[in-house]
Image 1 (cartoon, rainbow, N blue to C red):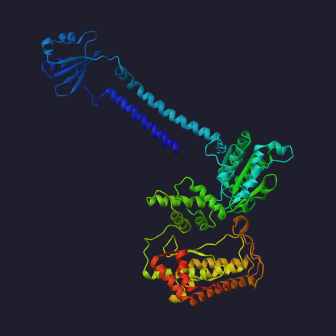
Image 2 (image 1 turned 180 degrees about the vertical axis):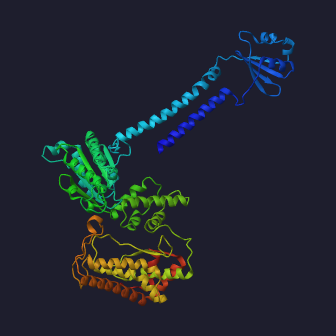
Length: 612
């Protein structure tokens, strides 16, 4: 389609050029009136002629009325002799302007050539376009089995190395050996060591798998060939296998080199599942990748890097030794890594001096590298929208909430009653969180609508941990039920504003029972497969590993956890009604309470932390 538009533009441009040239030659589109010499003599005698232009054998006549005419004089004779033969006296030519035109120039030849050559040129141009498209179609047919592989040269100024990748220290250390293999293969071959055939990068979306792969190529100073796994698969059986062979052949010719296959789960899913998109073409492509990995010679200096965020669906044959020898896990960045990532993305932006990057990093637990890059970009957009010259710390903090919940919806029309319900609801969350032991500190409370949320309470941990205890989970459950309990106490009924809280609390309570073994009645047993990422072809027919009787007990225990959390939140709020009212009044007045303001409201009441 793109080529068709290009050809149409070329055709239009050519026609315009031809039209302009023809216009320049002809000078006018008005066709002169043809006259005989007898008619010319009559017009001269009647003094209707103002000018005669002699152009070779042709006579161009301009009449006094502005009309133009043409005729031809006698061959071999001059104008005066021709007119004299027709009885025109010299005195009759006194008021007529005579001009002799030299037709040896461009216009003379153009008048002769353009009328005859122009149709031929147009026909040739049309044939050229037709044959050009046919040639491209033929070349595409012959290159149908060629891989659409992209080369990133390490010689470019934008070369990426490990220093451009913040965090992921363990992953970079694991890949340093790959860099050494590429730089000094003989050292390893002399020891009898085999160079790794493939390295599988596994991690959540946005953790930097592609960036890290390019950094390996940059560190090794080798060509980096990149292709998406979905580009291998076509509707025609055998094309994917052909493209796989071509991609591996291209990388081998440029060795030492890196071949990077992104989203390998598009073709590397388990075979023989029967569901989930299994087809002959995809399986043939996978088989060809397995064959190519096995076909590497001992001294082949090509490393295959692949990336996926669904390692659970990959075929076991891909993961065995000799194919993807190494599997590198990329975790979400911790607080120190997030600080480093934020600093990297702030380098090319005018950021306010003495900005507290750690404060921003604290508010972004669970953010991937891509999320942090988006956060910095949103902050820059916000600053530009407000006509600022530098990006301030407040812009970054505002962007955190925009990425998490969406933009503020200050224009949303809500009634005074809805605003009051939202204020008590968020005050309930915040007060319960501030009252219970083991709860994370409250960083912000707002009743300004964002995204689908009418308001929100932002609480974040002091330090990030990988383990969480039963008491901490119970505190989280009670905090989730804080808004529900506050509405129940103040208004005597509940609104739909607590629906998302109930959903999250129910999900967490079920995990406590079935996944974490924290139910006293059911004991330390995991119920169900516990797979958060279901693969349709494998998991749809899996049976639950517990009876209907146990299922009823699980439901009862889930209800028990929710009931206990509800009672805890209700007791806290009933005992501290004055504090709840103070927080609500401040929210109704200011709409947003930052951490210092919130704890400043609590300070006069000297609250003690309560056990769950």
